[in-house]
Length: 283
Ligand SMILES: *[C@@H]1O[C@H](CO)[C@@H](O)[C@H](O)[C@H]1NC(C)=O
Ligand SMILES: *[C@@H]1O[C@H](CO)[C@@H](O)[C@H](O)[C@H]1NC(C)=O
Image (cartoon, rainbow, N blue to C red; front, side, top):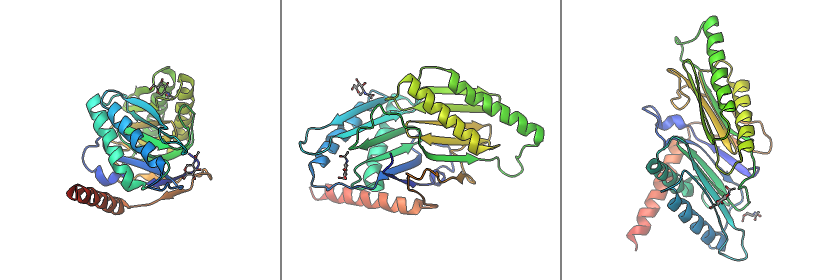
C-alpha cells in the first residue's frame, strides 16, 4: 500500500439522508500508471470480469489474472460487509468497479471502499498479506446541545470500550459485532486474512480509535486489511456534518485530503458516464 496515493472524499456529500451501502468512504490510487495499450490492461479486464461475476454469489473473492505474458499479473479482491445480502453485495461491487476508471484512471493499483464493500487491485501480490496501516479515520462528536456531562462521558466511554472489546473476543469470523448500552461496533476483515491476522488488524484498528476518537460518539478506522466502526444512539460516523478528517501521519503514504471535492468527483463520474455513453453511441 506504500505507493498508494490516497484520495479522500467526504462521504457526507451523499449521506444527508439514510446511509446506504453504496456510500463512498475513500479511494486510493497508486501513483504508477500503466499504458492503456499494454497487456496489463487485458489482465485487468479479465480480473474485473472475474470479480464482477463472483460477486453474484460470494461476499469475498480473490483472483490473479496472468493470461497476458511478459507483464505483471493483476491481483484483485473484493470484500462485502458480513451483513450485506448477496444481491446487495453484487450491486456494491459493481458500483466500485464502475467508479474505478473515474477515481483512479490508468492506475496500476487502486482500492475503493464503499460503506458496504471494498475492492482492491494491483500488480503487486498483496493477497494474504497483513496490512495494518491506517488509510482513513474519522471521529464524530455529538452535535452541540447533545453533549455529555462528565458522568455521562465516563459512561459513554466505558460503553464504547466494552463494545470495542467485544470485537476482540469474538474469535474467528471476519465480520464481528459488539454492543454495550447505546454503543454499537462493527469489525470487518478482508477475507484473505487468517484468523490471527484478522485479530491483529482488528486490535490495531480498535487501538487507533481509542487513541484518536476521545469522547467522540462515533468513529471509523479503516486499515489496509480491516476496519472498525462504532456509533452511538443518535451519532453515526456515516451521517457526518462536523466530522473531523485526520490526515494519517504515516510518512510512506502521501495522503492528500481534498476537502469538499465532491464536485470534482461528480464531474469525473459525469465525464466517464458521457464517455461511456459516447462509446455506446458509436458502436
Ligand atoms: C506495477 O506497474 C507499474 C506501472 O506500470 C510499474 O512501475 C511497477 O514496477 C509495477 N510493479 C510490479 C510489481 O510489477
Ligand atoms: C484465493 O481464492 C482461492 C479460491 O479461488 C482460495 O483457494 C485462496 O485461498 C484465496 N487466497 C486468499 C489469499 O484468500
